[in-house]
Length: 109
Image (cartoon, rainbow, N blue to C red; front, side, top):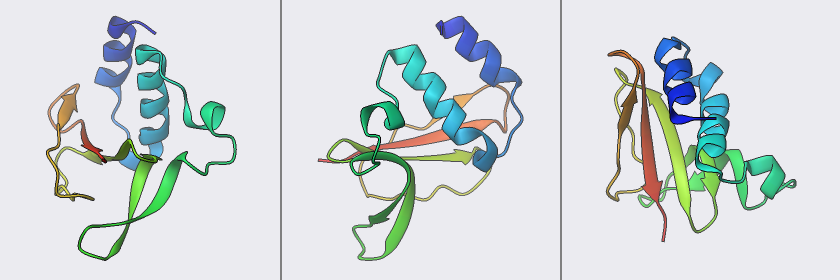
């Protein structure tokens, strides 16, 4: 997938987070030549979608995509309030038209 293909596809998308986040992440993997979760970890023990996580406040939460010792990824609609799994610097990215998807990417040490 080229950057232009990625932008064209996701600029037009008007999908909910639930219906789009896995395909969006897989397209990013393709664009960046990064392993996809199921190919890299068929058992889902260290790199997977929908992973329960412990937040730093002691509560439980969910990461849309999780890779042990690398990141927890939460994707949300841009207009929704943002939740943080970890109090670390994040890099929100807006794709497409206003009100489109926003990403929250948090690195885990």
